[in-house]
Amino acid sequence: PKPSRAPIRRARFLRQGFHKGGTRMCIKENYVLKSGFDSNAFLSDMKAAKEAVGESGPADARHLEFLVGLARGFACMGYVLVIIGASQSFSLLPGIACVAGAILISTGRCMRWVIIGHHVTHGGYDQIHKNHPGVLSKHYKRGIFGTGWRRFIDWLDWMLPGAWDVEHNKMHHYYLSEDTDPDLVERNFAMLHTMPLPSFVKYASMVFWMFTWKATYYSPNTFKELEHSRKNTFAVRCWPKSRPKTEPLTVFDFAYLPFLHVFKGDFKGALFWPVFFIQWLLVVIPMMVLVVLPAAVPPALGVTGLWPFALEWQRAALKTLVFSVAADLLSNAHSFVIVACNHSGEDLYRYSTSCKAYSAEWFLRCSYSSVNFETGNDFVDIFYGWLNYQIEHHMFPDMTPLQYRKLQPLVKSVCKKHGVQYIQQNGFWRTWKMLRCAVGDD
Image 1 (cartoon, helix red, strand yellow):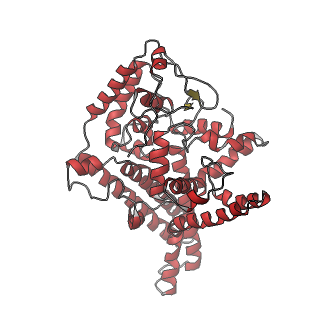
Image 2 (cartoon, rainbow, N blue to C red):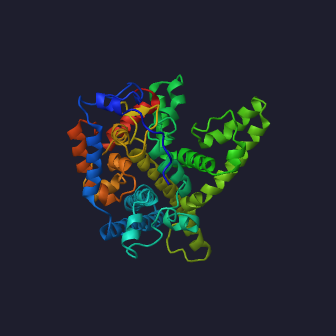
Image 3 (cartoon, rainbow, N blue to C red):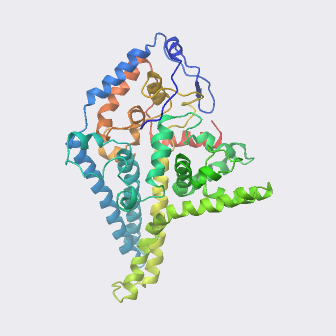
């Protein structure tokens, strides 16, 4: 169910061509609409654009099965290449095999999250189950996909699927760029803004977050949001009052916060963090195992006498471990580039007020606080994880990837017709703009 929203009282500002609730990220204070902007016509045109796309059907189901098979194929081929390449003496071809294998593992892992898990958990395929029973496997449905033991089959990553659902599908989507949006880059890196460090050091620190962000930030922070969304959890009962719930939680907080509470004389708060850390650790242990598991293949074959290669299995195991970890670092960097910059930059906006879902104001915010990348074919769309349709996705979160491809030119034309901002730029350029925002240069 969608969170209830406060009724909007800003229609008169829209018709006058400005909105008092908006603050541009980092610098500006309001966005401007052309004179004579008609919010009712804009809303009607947006809804008509969605209706023109039509309902999802068997073609969308087949496309999902293709994406799932491709992601699994990438991962399996990647593991084979890494293990075989690591089992040879160092030379050009084995090195290429290991690098290619790491890239394939990374790509498959990224696809499983940002394309498959993302759209399924938004309910993008639920309409197919209703209108075309039996066309698609029943577990590709919101509330079922990735839950319980199916997490190990559908989508095993650093984030718990249920935690992602709370943090992203609900809090981020329905409070986009508001103070309660957990994904505000400039707020989450506010401490970096004030640190007396040279600019190049700040940018260098962002490289660390880029290659580790799912494990070091996104996993603990989404877990925090999940625990706060449930009734009577340990986090709800014992959360330290001195720690704002909206403040981002990273793995480093688990290390220093207990000492901070001891220094303040708050021994109850000091005990809270080790317990909460253990709860989170139990969530990520399966992913830790998945990352190192390929390195267990050479020892398993070696100790049983089945190792077929000339290189010692001990050295092969170490090389396999290195490239398996490298694959996860690459997956972090890939997802960072296509995820973190969707709503960040000096040309996007933040809001101090809320609005009603699927109202004219809702659609305006989706366009003024989101950006698209290049779009149009499977190669580009898979590389960007279908996050290159971010404006359309925030307007209508429960659609399939193929529907977004059809919807994008329609939404773009509606925005042009009504003089509404619609930004579509290269993903690497948007990453640079996001980094400038994160370090405080914009």
